[in-house]
Length: 143
Image 1 (cartoon, rainbow, N blue to C red):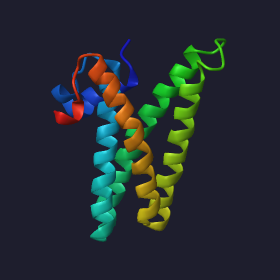
Image 2 (tube, rainbow, N blue to C red):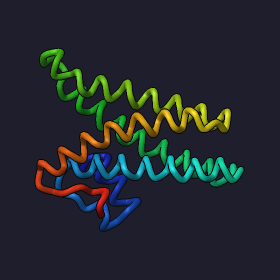
Image 3 (tube, rainbow, N blue to C red):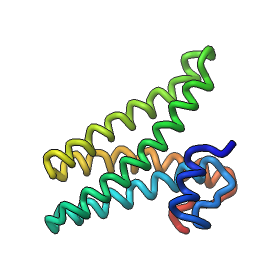
């Protein structure tokens, strides 16, 4: 069975998303999420609420795929040591905070929560990029 990330990225981005490594697929999702936030930032700046809404909706879709991955990881590790569950639990907290930030952007049309979400995801994306490199797949943000 294919992971939700695989299905989402293949459906949305075709051959670009054909990655062998789960690390690389996750790093790609992070990059796509950050790209959406950057575009949303521009739309807010240009007072284009329709385009802003479309980018936020797309970013939320990606965030839900990432959240579902973390939830599946958490469920798979149930019954194991609490230190094993720490990463998925922290990722779930991060994604929930990002969801709150994006909701605030929708409601208030404010850049501050958008910048907060971008900063948090950018930090985590760096770690996934490193894992993808260690797997011999290279940095996906380079194409």
